[in-house]
Length: 75
Image 1 (cartoon, one colour):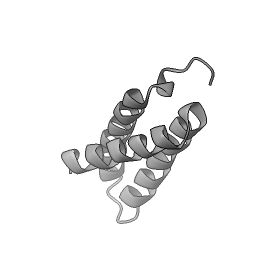
Image 2 (cartoon, rainbow, N blue to C red):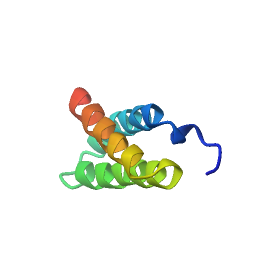
Image 3 (cartoon, rainbow, N blue to C red):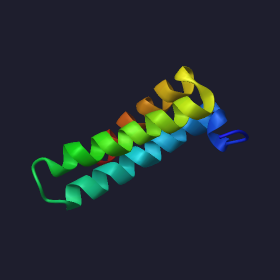
Image 4 (cartoon, rainbow, N blue to C red):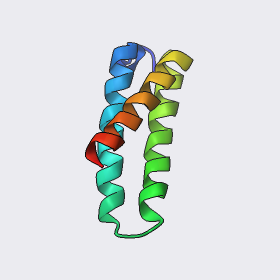
Protein backbone atom coordinates (compact mmCIF):
# COMPACT_ATOMS: atom_id res chain seq x y z
CA UNK A 1 0.00 0.00 0.00
CA UNK A 2 2.57 2.51 -1.08
CA UNK A 3 1.33 6.07 -0.61
CA UNK A 4 -1.52 5.00 1.65
CA UNK A 5 -3.04 7.43 4.13
CA UNK A 6 -2.57 4.75 6.80
CA UNK A 7 1.18 5.34 6.71
CA UNK A 8 0.65 8.24 9.09
CA UNK A 9 0.32 6.78 12.63
CA UNK A 10 -2.39 9.28 13.60
CA UNK A 11 -4.55 8.06 10.74
CA UNK A 12 -3.96 4.48 11.86
CA UNK A 13 -5.53 5.37 15.21
CA UNK A 14 -8.48 6.99 13.45
CA UNK A 15 -8.86 3.92 11.23
CA UNK A 16 -8.88 1.70 14.31
CA UNK A 17 -11.43 3.95 16.02
CA UNK A 18 -13.77 3.72 13.05
CA UNK A 19 -13.29 -0.04 12.79
CA UNK A 20 -14.11 -0.37 16.49
CA UNK A 21 -17.33 1.62 16.17
CA UNK A 22 -18.46 -0.22 13.04
CA UNK A 23 -17.45 -3.62 14.42
CA UNK A 24 -19.43 -3.14 17.60
CA UNK A 25 -22.51 -1.90 15.78
CA UNK A 26 -22.46 -4.76 13.26
CA UNK A 27 -21.75 -7.36 15.93
CA UNK A 28 -24.45 -6.01 18.24
CA UNK A 29 -27.04 -6.16 15.45
CA UNK A 30 -26.23 -9.81 14.84
CA UNK A 31 -28.17 -10.59 18.07
CA UNK A 32 -26.04 -13.63 18.65
CA UNK A 33 -23.98 -14.42 21.73
CA UNK A 34 -21.00 -15.25 19.59
CA UNK A 35 -21.73 -12.76 16.82
CA UNK A 36 -20.29 -9.71 18.56
CA UNK A 37 -16.93 -11.28 19.52
CA UNK A 38 -16.50 -12.84 16.09
CA UNK A 39 -17.27 -9.65 14.20
CA UNK A 40 -15.03 -7.64 16.52
CA UNK A 41 -12.21 -10.13 16.04
CA UNK A 42 -12.43 -10.00 12.26
CA UNK A 43 -12.77 -6.22 12.02
CA UNK A 44 -10.15 -5.48 14.70
CA UNK A 45 -7.77 -7.91 13.04
CA UNK A 46 -8.31 -6.19 9.72
CA UNK A 47 -7.43 -2.80 11.26
CA UNK A 48 -4.27 -4.34 12.71
CA UNK A 49 -3.17 -6.03 9.49
CA UNK A 50 -3.93 -2.97 7.35
CA UNK A 51 -1.95 -0.64 9.59
CA UNK A 52 0.93 -3.11 9.99
CA UNK A 53 1.30 -3.67 6.25
CA UNK A 54 1.11 0.05 5.49
CA UNK A 55 3.25 1.55 8.24
CA UNK A 56 4.65 -1.11 10.57
CA UNK A 57 4.23 -2.20 14.18
CA UNK A 58 3.83 1.24 15.75
CA UNK A 59 0.92 2.11 13.48
CA UNK A 60 -0.61 -1.33 14.10
CA UNK A 61 -0.46 -0.78 17.85
CA UNK A 62 -2.13 2.62 17.45
CA UNK A 63 -4.81 1.07 15.24
CA UNK A 64 -5.59 -1.52 17.92
CA UNK A 65 -5.67 1.22 20.56
CA UNK A 66 -8.13 3.17 18.41
CA UNK A 67 -10.18 0.01 17.86
CA UNK A 68 -10.39 -0.60 21.61
CA UNK A 69 -11.41 3.00 22.26
CA UNK A 70 -14.01 2.94 19.50
CA UNK A 71 -15.50 -0.30 20.79
CA UNK A 72 -15.57 1.01 24.35
CA UNK A 73 -17.13 4.35 23.47
CA UNK A 74 -19.99 2.73 21.57
CA UNK A 75 -20.54 0.05 24.20
